[in-house]
Length: 251
Image (cartoon, rainbow, N blue to C red; front, side, top):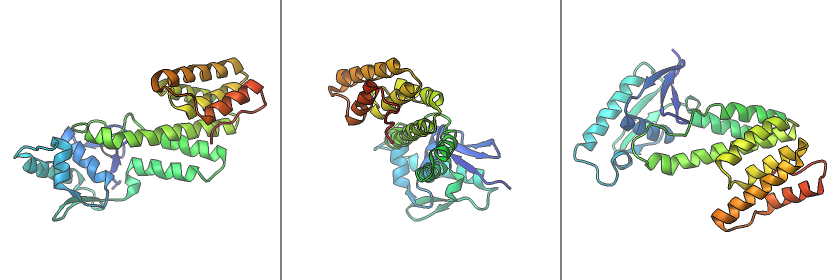
């Protein structure tokens, strides 16, 4: 039988062979997410209660949590190598990290740091293709998305920047422009993204467009944060102004 796959990089859930297994409620998805994020470590019942119901859970919340865990166990019953184990303090998920999209994503980005630019672009493309939307989608409450999901999203953004840098390094400027443009539109205050877009545009012969990116980014930084661009963006700007054969891409 195929292994169950746990997904956190988008809607939280379990899949097998491409077929969704569940869970079906936000509360169950919250418990599943906590167990997967702390895989092979105990997650206390108290932490589950606070995450789902806040600091003042109802009297019935503990029984409800046990019910949610029981439903997750029934989903996992056909998979003998994966189970939710009860301990005196709470529960832990016994599984392999290879079954989790988040951990596979992190492993690919780690490997990509120590190889050539062409291989880096391939590995990061594979890693980024795992994302199916904002992380930890569909859980109960805002604690998981706001405390954990925001850090996961930062990992994605950094991987997008690294991918764009690798594309520039191997001369695939048009693809880098597409990737960096989306990132700058979504996050206009990310200076490295702006620097990468400037480099890709400049190396594509679009010097005026590269300078406009600097102008627009500087306006955003001054207006929204009250700061001037940092050293990376200034270096890229100076390189474009001097019109050299290459501009730095911030790796």
